[in-house]
Length: 246
Image (tube, rainbow, N blue to C red; front, side, top):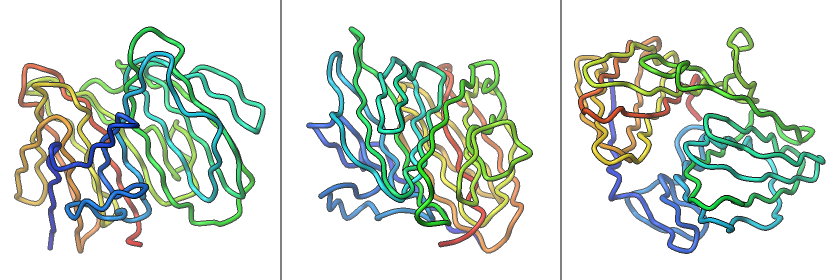
């Protein structure tokens, strides 16, 4: 049995102050179309950071925080003494664990575009840690590229939760094949006007437009999934394979 829910881009909550689109209820948001999370994923925001703006030093605790950079650059400074730029094609990972602080600022002359993801770890009170890794367009083009996973056999960033997060850029009429190993999955399309994707799973075909989010719940494991680009504009998306239902 398969349960599918599509959250259209326009149904997401928009926070004008943060210039951010929420796929889940976040902060004081009460959008009835949104839930408070899906499996261990609690935050899935698409953010735009204006030139010379950002987020002053603030705390985090008990979350695995993933920043998927789409365009631009952020200067990151944290209480673990990391000071560095996070750029296009890079993924930043923070295991906030028992507690840490950081700031993020766009020092460039153009907007920075990114996805911000928070995941609850399966172990509380972890020692805070940090990682960053580049995943280039060639690694994502017409293929699923693992970027964060608990599977240590994959060449990507490690996370304290039973998930694998993939990124992909699919061209028109190209199909990428994957597997929903667990019983829950999320597909989030990056906002890029004109981009479209068809997701095929268990005899179902779902058409997604840029910015849309697809939530999948299955009673089975190891379900094949196909992603086909259906627009002249290449479609960038991320795909969560969630191994356990929470």
